[in-house]
Image (cartoon, rainbow, N blue to C red; front, side, top):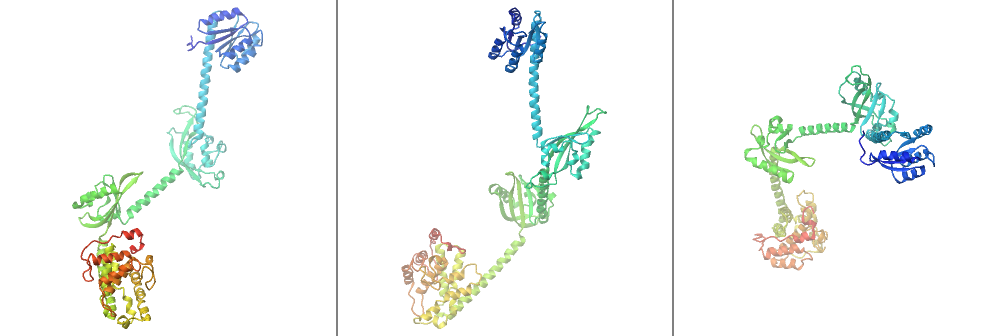
Length: 629
């Protein structure tokens, strides 16, 4: 007895004999089947249009049409309906025709009552088996399609070779070599093996005839068919694959009498991987050599500040071998006891700022202390800190050189001071009536530069320029310089040449400041009325503007051969009168503050007070505020 369906089966009985129809209906109702009766083909077709039936019990002798017409309609319109023929003994030929057209069973009109349920139960079993077969067939087809899709679209090459090494199957992935499937099927594997790897391939593909070893991976080179690639594609002689090969046989693998049928396996293109590995090896070797051959002593630390590695320069500098310091905390071998906290502070600096730089002292294996510069930075991998580099440079010789250089510079300063003094003396010998003028101008110019807020380097440059600003007068006849009366036009024109003469003398001297330019401009006026170049405000160096005011104030307030001293008040009155006309306003204001508020004198300088703000020049964007402007 079969398992009943989860629902009542629908059966259409088409019989010309009402008595037979009623008996069958009675027998099937006991099985909980739903029965519909009709006695002709036309009504049967209408019923099939309205409802799906599991079975049709179809009389072979219909009064209105051929039974095959109803069968054809049912098979086209309701293909899942199972057809059972109701036939008589004189209708054998029609029954055979019905079988040929797709009938599943037949029942004779002379049936007994026990036969009907069994025949329908058998038909139901057949129906279910056919359904299961259909489902399984569909699953098999889908599985086959998935398998084919996976195989054909695999990034790896999947292949079969027969017992002679001839391709019986290969997927599309061999297109990486420039070969099509059709080109390789039926060809021997040696067609694509790089010549130098043929022996290795032969052993791999044929060892399975006598061996049951597990499939293993080997590397082989396959020839590239460049003729099938476009001219723009990179041309290579071969690609490298990682191959897995396994033999298959006609019976169980443990059977000693098995027959070798061929080889199957998977091959993966690892050319890029090989190139990457070779590149990494090259880089590793390069950086290892760079690390070991660096003239700087280098330590590699982990995140706990333990030493991972030390290069040869470290061994030479600190007298420790690399093995002696590995896995030790950095403070233990080379940091003096009194500098442990400093070393820890360096580590914190790396964490907060990314790098740390410092000059300090470290100790060698023998206890000797050496001066070193230290540079430390983190080692980052994928944005994650994995350790630190510490780089040490021996600066003992450098520090000694700096001391020697400082001594040399000091000697040079003294020598330069002597030369400047000689220049000043030369001018004053030729013009004794203005003796001390250059030094007084230099003192006032320095005070003005301080008041305006220039830096110490700029102040030194202005003082130097002030000290020798009249150097050009060495080329002016002494009788003109000391003439007590009014100068003629020719004489005055000669006097006006002294800034240019000074410039020509000074321009070849490599001062750390633009002394020649400052001296050249000390008689210029911001309205362009000065000499010798007739420069205007924006073309005059700030230092030149300061020296101009200092020169005018000292000249007016001091004695001259052609007049007595006019005094400071007269000098301040003069520069105030022409403030913004001849003289820079900021410099004039600074000069007034020096003399009126801070009690400046040419002898004692500034007694007290703060410097004037430089905001005016910052707001103007005066590029001449700095020496490199």
